[in-house]
Image 1 (cartoon, rainbow, N blue to C red):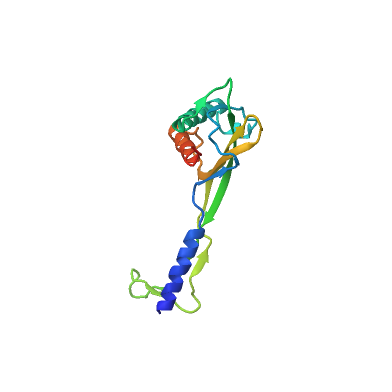
Image 2 (image 1 turned 90 degrees about the horizontal axis):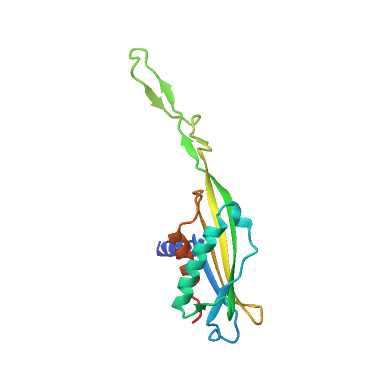
Amino acid sequence: MIFRIGLIITAFIFLYSCSAPTALYNTENLSTSGYSQYKRYAFQPTKDTSYTKMFDKKRLEALMSAAAIKELSKNGMQLDTANPDCFFTYKLIVNRNYEVSQEQKVEYNPNVYTPAFDNDAKIYTFSSDNRPVTYAGRLSVDTLREGSLVIDMIDRKQGNVVWRSSAQDKTQETFQQPTPDRVNEIIHKMFKKFPK
């Protein structure tokens, strides 16, 4: 008995630890010489335009750059478009996806017997011929917005990526532009492990 309970708890912990979180944030430090030489930065324009079918590019870039400036200034970095030590650029991929679910429905169809002497009374009986029937149930289709955002820090002299942060998330589709609060939250989490 105790062995079974232990086995069930172990299986639950294993399944819970393997389940994917809603939002995923990753950071990679790719510089071999450290980050103390990077004090000034500039933004590079992106060539990525695939997401413009869903978002207003100018508005989104203004929100992202304002949030990034706020996070980088916390780390003592300054925006300097004339003589930067590094560049920041991004790539954003956003897709609409559909998630289909269908829950099963069990219906019981008993035999109904109405006695001859009382038409209002009904007698319900189940027999081995009259098993419950399982139907596919109601079909529901959800529209989801799935996205991945990658921010790269590029060394100006060498031209290679020295730091990278990525975010992935999936939410219900609202067919609206991202709010400033949501953009600030995502950028803050992406720069949380920025090297000092």
